[in-house]
Image (cartoon, one colour):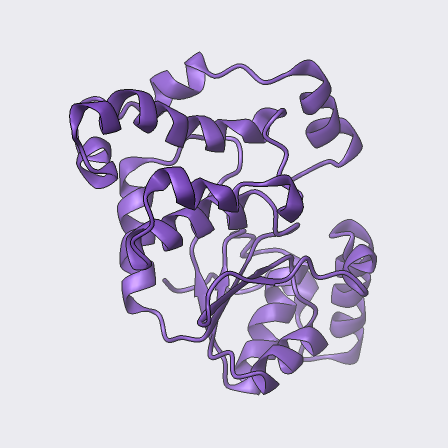
Length: 227
């Protein structure tokens, strides 16, 4: 998974470019909110989930033994990606981009890609989105199920308010994905993977069926402005 080059405005080769990049990161990516709060949780002895890390935080994670950084945001032309890619290169960390969204039922290819990801990355690893709540949450469910062997019913605990995940808003479509499996697939004796690979798995149809609460939608879309 090769990242696209940063756009010229985020060229870190010059002092001015680096300053502009940090300014954009600090303000437009709300990085000032993450200086003292990382929403970091080790969910196993080999994987930690966090919000978007600063470069100096990546250095601290490297000191704790982390070898791989998994970026779930995409953002190949964004300031955060330019800074993260630069920091990983300097620190000798492997950076892997695996883009997933927080308001969509993941495609079949995305689910299978997550399974492959957790089978192939070097551990210990750090996995992050912007807030560490939603995309990190669904990927943590996949990790717990595919790599650790937890049943989906138990792995869904990774989508929880203690990680700042809001199931009442549009991000609740992530919970709904697994709830549909528990209604359709599990009673039929299907494993989660069998269900995903079957004709029953219809991401577009499931998204159309999902309804978020108005108050939860206000929190995630207007107040918290979740990505």
